[in-house]
Figure (cartoon, rainbow, N blue to C red):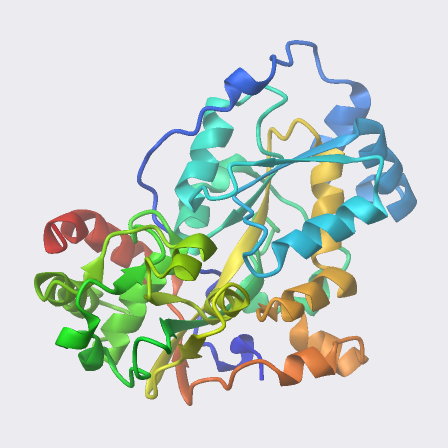
Length: 379
């Protein structure tokens, strides 16, 4: 069963919160001072394939631009490497510039602002919900051809941002060093001293935000108030068990981060570099989330940006998310149509019996609270 069918209220993604750090890419290339062509202007205002004429016309316009700038897409994140390679193989005329793979959602927006008007600006974004909600003035509305297959709960009505892939918050651990934790309380024990990390800063990164959300609901709190989750990580820090290290496949492989809060599909991927790596989703209330796709309204390659979006919601790319252990937005529609890779779907971890996802309002409130309380709680 997909996350969408278990979700409550309106949501979209893996949730990150704006906090700062400018990513300056301007030094990589010159500015684009020339006035945009008529074709570029038309592409930048297109809200669907129909505005190009046909899908072939969109492809031709994107090939004419010849480039696509993506940002914050680690190749080991939800199978993004295979997604990028598949697009490149399908459209070899379009050169993909992979910028700052490990940037946070907030840093993606900062990069677009810093490089606005330059040919180095990101064309597209992959974002958590809170950053998406706070950045809608940066996006161009666009509805892909498979728009109707995407659950209403996962898309902004005009297509400013749209959920694409998701999963459940989990705990990954090196089974050669630890027994499987069964609850948050286990992680507070002496056995986990200096061993427990989250994937980023919850005031900036969606996965870290979700870790606090999971700790909140696992502590009998609700998504209306993330304070119980903040309190848990404060206690974890005081116990000497919290690691303040950014998690990567390298830190997991080396043993530097032997216990990690992260999305189930990201934790599962670490088994490739550490054969002792196992993943657990705690019993009780689970926390789910999706990441969103959006187009930069000032994209230097507006047709390529729209073609990229079309590809991401195609059967091919949606099955590639599945291959990465993530649940694609069109999962239920593809099951009905018989286009979903059922073998891959059968390998997904079991969903928690009770799953929650924050609404827009809850996400915004939690982001504000984290901005006020997180740094002091874990200092």
